[in-house]
Image (cartoon, rainbow, N blue to C red):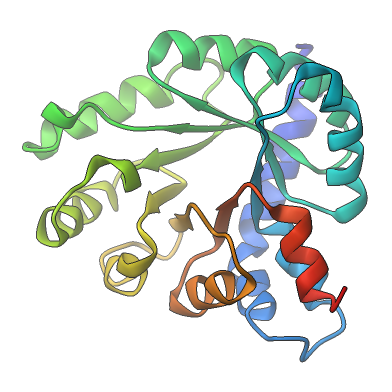
Length: 230
C-alpha cells in the first residue's frame, strides 16, 4: 500500500471519528430527519463472508449505500483496499494476533479489531503494555477496536476491564449489546462503543440509544432498506 493512499485513509478515518457521536444520535431517530438513514450507514461495520469473486459488486454496493466500514476476510483486504480507495468506505479486518495484524495493515486495512489474550485482563499494567505493543505496529494510524464481546466476561469483570481500557490508546470497545449503558459510564468521551451481531433495525436503534457509535452486522444493506422504508 502506498504512503499516499494510507495517509488518505487515515485522514478519512479521523474525520469520521470526530462526528460519529452526533451521527449516532441522529441515526437513532426513526425517520425523524431525512438524513437519518445516511447517518446510520456511516456507523455500520458490514462484515463480509463472500467468495473473492463477489467482492467487487459488494464493495460497489457498500460505497453506493454509504456504509462506513467493510470488514473483509484477511485474504481479501488488499483487493478491498484497492476497490474502496478514496471512496470514504474504510477497510476493516478482524485479526487473531500480531502476525495477522501486520498482514492486514500491510494489505491496506485502516480499521483493526482484535481480542486481548484472556490472561492479560487480570492486571492493568499487562493490558496497557499489550495495547501499546499493538498500537505501535505499522504506522500506528489505524483505528483500533478492542474486542471484548466474545470473551464471555461476567458483568463486573467486563466493567473492570473497560475502566482499565478507558485510559489506553483504543478507539472503540466492542462489547455485548446489553452492557452499553453501563460501559459508557466508565469511558472517556473520546472512546467509542461498538456492538456486534446487530440483525434488526430495532436492535440497531436500541444500541445507539444506549450509547453505541458503531454497529457490527452482516446485514448492513438490509438494515438500511428497513430504515428507509424499503
